[in-house]
Length: 417
Ligand code: GLU
Image: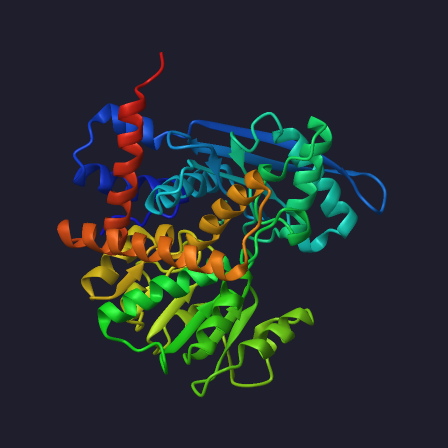
């Protein structure tokens, strides 16, 4: 058996290559679409509260801008690498194209554990990182947003740093901002809402009822915690949930609001009073109907894919499944709703936020939700249709839809000069 690829950029390339093959793209087009347009690595000196300085490393990658400005979040995490940011940036290109948003793909990352910084240190880190990547970002160039361990407050600092430097308040330079500052209603839970909409379609296709369905959620950040609440409201049973420290399992069902209160008190879900303590690995293999990886990359690999019992796997995280695992799940008849479709609700409402910022006219939450549902359902069906046409998984279908759109934009624009 060949060795499993775990390098995220190589994984991204391998999914891309499958689509390029199906679309019969020539070698030149494959090279253009698979090579990041630009990558920038910066050093970020930060004055620490205890005196002295520390230097952090950050990256910003614009993978492709053929269909519009680069779009994608910024991650603060100790394990960030340039290859990971390149992979995440390319997934943003395919995600935006899959949803038919007028954006390319980008991503940023800073190698840091933000939980070990004070608020002041986090603000200085964010502002200096923003100033270092400032030549690349802008509302019509490259538009950051939240990702793992970044939030609306951090987006507000990015917006302010950019605006102070340019001398004009520029709302559209970043999305996922607070409501007081050009943010969109519904953005906070948009990723979860998007997962909910496509999960509904996938359940319908597999004749599974959400009501009463057993759901396990790995990761209790923005995506995982909101999704737990939304599915619970719809009548699903959240039987397991976890965070980076571990998780909890109770076949009778957990109450998302109580899990969130526990997290907000600064405690890991593994110490939750009810149910049984489980590891993140055990969570993935539970007897459930729906499994939602909502944490980090490479969680489902060839080592555990054969033991996944869920009928539907909805990828709220980016890159949770390796290509070998993806093949195994497909052969075992599991439905994987791939990341570039499943978690696209976040960037879709980012798009709505950017539009509202330009208009400086803001929508009510029901309007955001209604439009999001339309985008997600439409994307789900074009992906399912492409998957049926190519007799492949939904991931295969999603990449075909996305890569075809970016290739077409590249073809009609032509290559400069
Ligand atoms: N970080 C999110 C993602 O991976 C959102 C990106 C955005 O809104 O630009 O899709």
